[in-house]
Structures are given as structure tokens and as C-alpha cells.
Amino acid sequence: MSRDIVSCRPEDGLYSTWKVMAAGGLQNIPVLSTDSKPLGVLDIRDAMKGLFEQEEYQERLLFDYVAGVGYR
Image (cartoon, rainbow, N blue to C red; front, side):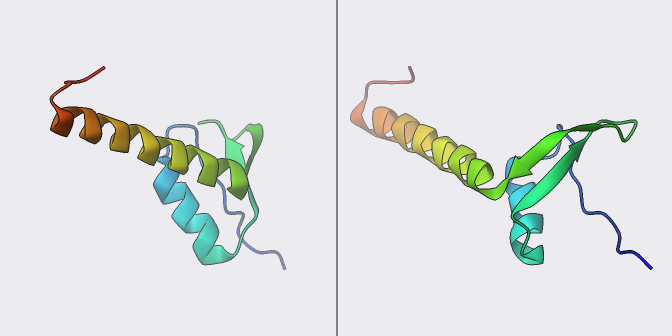
């Protein structure tokens, strides 16, 4: 017997993919194309780095908006 394979697709959101990884205690998750061909492997550290960069960008935008600089 084998378990179901947990995977993601390139169009999946990074946050939702990270939640699946964290809930399952997974360090790596395969990335599959729409026809289920392997494209690569997403490491949880890379997912966390991407999420952190998104948050930094949002923080910069909010700071610039509040400071009256506008968007860059």
C-alpha cells in the first residue's frame, strides 16, 4: 500500500502551498505541471523566503503610502 502523493502546481499560491507543507510536516513538495510531469521540488525554506519577501514588499508599500511618497 502507498500513500497519496502531496504535490503542488506552479499556479498554486505560495501561502496555500506552505500551509499544506506545514500541516503535513513536509520539508519538500514536488511541483507538477498540468499534465502531472515533474518540474522540480519546492523546499520549505524557499517557500518561507518567498513569503518573507512578499511581506517586506507589502510593508515598504504601506510605509511609502503613509509617508506620502506614493507607490514606487
